[in-house]
Length: 637
Image 1 (cartoon, one colour):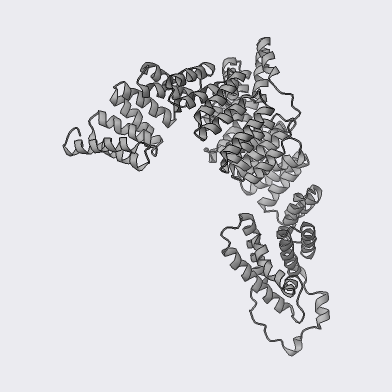
Image 2: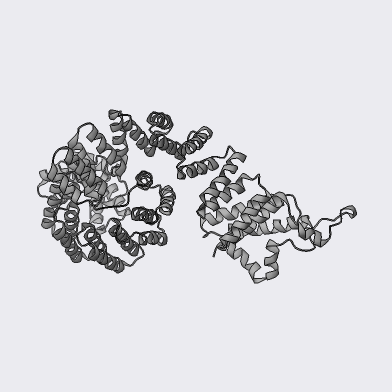
C-alpha cells in the first residue's frame, strides 16, 4: 500500500471523516476549510518524513500535494477566528452550492485527483484533474500534469493540446518544451519538434538531452552541418561527454570528414571498447575509405562477442559481396535469420547507446514508448527487459522478457535472461532448468550452452559445466567463446594442460581476444613454462587493452618468473595504481620487493594484501612474517 493509502486508511475506517476529505463540511465557512486543509497538509508532511521505504515517485507526488496544501493554507490560524456581525456566515445551503472557487477549487480537485490515483481509480482521477484545470485554466502546472495523464492513457492528441496551452502560459519552462518536442516527434512533426528543442537550447545551452535530440533531428533531415556546429560548440564546454562525442563523430562521418570522424570514434572506443554503435560506424568508415581488413576485423570482433548479431553478419556479408567473395557472402547471409522486426532502428540505436553508457532510465523512457507503438516487436521488449534487469527490477524485467514472441530472433536471449533472473533470486537449479528448456527449443545456438556452463560453473559444479560446454562445441566447434569458457572450467578442475589447449584454440579463432590472450599468458607464467610465449601473448593483449590493470599485472608476473625483477616491479607498481584494491596484485608487488631484498616495502605490501582479503591467508602471512624478520635484521633496505 502507498503512503497516501496509509494516510487514507484513517478516513476509510471512519466514513464521516472520509467524506470530510472531499466534501466541504457543513457549518464551516471558507476560513474553516483553509484551516482544515492546513491540518491535512501537516499530517501529510509528517507521514512523508516517516516513509523511509516509500518509492521515490510516490514521495515526489505527495511532496507536491503537501506543497500545494501549504500554499493554499498559508496565513490561516489553527483556530477559527471570530466572525464580525456584518460578516455573518451565509446559510449552510448557500455555502454547499459553491463551497470553493478559482485556485481553491483547483487545489481541492487536484488533491482529490491524487488520492484517487493512488487508489488506482484512474477514470475518476482524470475527471477530477480535468475539473481542476477548468477551475484554474491559467495554471501551466496543472495543464502539464493533465497532458502527462492523457499520454499515460494513450490519448496523444489530448496530451498535445494540453501541453501546447501549458507552454503558451509558461514559455520559460524547459520541461514543457522538452515534453512538447517529444510529442511532436511522435507525430512525425520534425519541424515543430526542432523548434521546441531550439527553445530549450536558448534557455539552457548545456541541456544535454535537448542538444543531442536536436542534433539527431538535424541529421535525420540531412542538415549535418547544423548538427555538427551545434555538437562542436557543446563539446567545447563538455569535452568529457562520450555520447556527444559519438554524435559528433557521426556528423563528421556524414560530412565525409573521415580523419576527424575516425579520431573521434577511436577516442570514444578507448573509453568504451564494446560500444557497439561506435564499432559499426567505424567499420562503415573503414569501408568508405577502402580499408577492408580493418572493417572486417571490427565485424568479426562484434560477432565474437555476439554471434547472433544479424546486423554485423549482414554487413560482413555485404563486404564480402563487394569483394566478389561470393562463397563467404553466401555463408554469412545464410546465418542471418529472416526478421520482420525492422523500421525502428534509429530510435533503438539511441536506446542502446543509453544502455551502453549505463543511462538506464533514459533507455527505459525511449523503449517504453517504442514498445507501446510496436507491441509485437520482440527486440524492443528484450532490451526493455534488459534495462529493467540492470536496475534490479526483476518483476518488470520478467514481464518484458515474457512478451518476446517465440518466433522472434530474440526469443532465446529472453529465455536465457529469465534464467538469469532465477539465479539472481537465489535459485540456481531453476536457472539451470530454464536454460535446459531454452536449449531444447534452440539446440543449434551456442549461446544456450554458454549460459548453461556458466550456471554450473557459478554453482561450482565444474564437471557438469565442462560437459555442457562440450555439448555446445559439438554444435559449434568454431565458437571461440565456448573454447575459452571450457578452458577456464578445466583450469578450476586442475586440468591445466587441457586448459592451455582450449585457450590456444580460442586465440586461433579470435587472435585479438585480449581476455583469452591474457588468461593463457598468465597461466603459462604461473606454471613457469613457455615464459617467452607467455610474454608474447600478454603483450598482444596489452595492444588491444593498454590500460587494463589485470593484463599489466600479468606482464609483471611474467618478468618476475623470468627473474627480471626490476622490470617486474615497474609493471606491478603500475598494476596496483590501476587496481589498488586487488589482493593478488598487491601480493605480487610484495613478491617483487621481496626478490629485490626491499623487505620493508615487501612487508607493507603483504600487510595490505591481507587487509584486502587474500584468499590464501596462510601463505601471505608466512611471507609477511619473513619480511618483518628481515626488516628488523636490517637486511636489504
